Length: 238
Ligand code: ADP
Image (cartoon, rainbow, N blue to C red):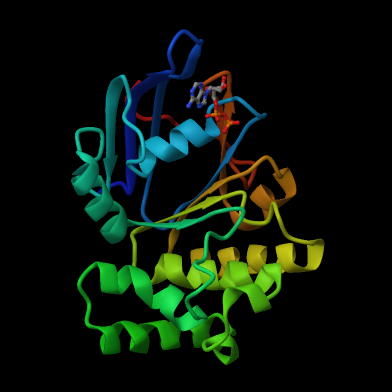
């Protein structure tokens, strides 16, 4: 029995103005429970790919389907709704709201999706406990360390139980100890069945928390490899 892919990119191309294609006929399938690292040098198309998956940008050609939703055709409001329901995002610089408490930051995505405040805060409390940061729930993000802030950002990303967790250089702004904590957290989430896509140029991070590596070079998927050394995986939609 085959399950619906969490991500299905078919022959996706994106070109900005007069430059070379930022993505060129990229096809990629990510199945539920996979943890995939997108690697590649600066300018290879990683952010472009991430933005297309998150519905923050539209391809010039090809289709982007996430958990059964055709993302490439969504308007702005539809894309915002899609993101709230389907994608949790974690960024290098956390993007927490400094004038809200930790609990309010984490509960916010559920409240934006229409969950009543009390229920949203119950779930936020559970998540903060699961991630070992419940003692900070009344604190403001500015008083926390980078590693603690990133845990809060991960809790917020998981708030609406998204089928997909997208992490963009989540340890890029952290010292090595905090980076290792966040890396361990991603590993644990993957072990619990969360589908994770991690964009990074940190090979060690990719190896430690994903089981598949997709390498972009000049906007093309140059390799797609299982981390076990089992060899290249088949790419879909050739
Ligand atoms: P990466 O995330 O791997 O560094 P990007 O996806 O940001 O790569 O960029 C891929 C290519 O697209 C680069 O050549 C970059 O200069 C170009 N590019 C990215 N965003 C824009 C934009 N908004 N306008 C014009 N060119 C862009």
